[in-house]
Length: 501
Ligand SMILES: [Zn+2]
Image (cartoon, rainbow, N blue to C red; front, top):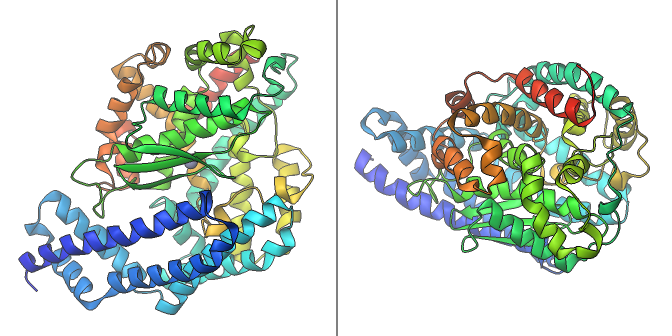
């Protein structure tokens, strides 16, 4: 095969690969949102067949020849095509090491286990999920060892979500965070400053909350022609291309802020996907580069923007107008303090900025213990509860609010969690850099979100998978410095809680 033939083959491969991914993604989205419960019985078969087709397409001799030809002749290719060849070669090399039957069985296990986890969480029934969870951990580890036999399989997992990340790097990073966060949290929790906001307690009708979601998406600049919102137990974002990105949220009648922050978080993911470069979308370089970079976008919008004083001022008129009986007395300052109330809590997705990374550290430790074989799925609930006591000082009342709360393990997302903490910390450096271009607080006050979007689009979003995540971050912010994040947290919470430094 010559380079010209390989380039034609690449075009066809990208189209077929995109179509299969699109179909599987749509089925998965349908299953999480509107499909009846028993649809999973047929879905497992269909998803199994589609993933078999995807595996066969990726590992077919003509695909391999095409990728190998391009990879060997990378010097002749333009920058984008050379990167495609490099990435496809890496993917091919990894997937070829996994036996086909194992690959397909794993995909089916993930579909089945995700459905069982949903019911187990609703019914607070960990025993029904336990055997599947054990299999997920076992098979994930088995696959990691197929891909990189000489490496710690947990490092292989971390690398799947954030290329280059290792357990040793995570440990060092978490250590820095702990040293900064734990003493600050100690001062915050013993501070007499009252941040509970009684105006935000009570009933907020879901119908009005849905309107609020639409308003928030509009403020953030999400294009309604290319994005849509659905409702699921666990909020998420799924993207098919820059022309179709879907977010979900979960409404609680007695908690206005929960859904609002889910929408802002998922909206941050969506903005990234909606702004991938035109020439990259639907190609093998379309889509965000890694989960660390992805979470750095969502957590930036959720916390650094969404929990800022200026954002509270911006949305206050809407809240007062639509909840006149409840919120007419709410002020910008009261809302700002309420959305930054910090206290150890049970649920990661609803944790405040200060305690959030402690939730991640618990999961990191558990995943490592499971992969090392020090504990089994049988031990997970008790170990979860023990670590919540150790890290956050609280008792976990049931598995629904404990080990069953997150969906990640059910779909094989082992090694994903540290991306949230890394992404959160990246945000503080983005803020410093962004402030060199324009005053971020002023832009948020004025509702000028296009300034923020333009900044991210030109530096991160439009590049898709064109650069490795670390390189991408370094190009924008220089070296990663977790102490910048600690400083950001100290500055913010010292003021809110009236602490002297
Ligand atoms: Zn996220």
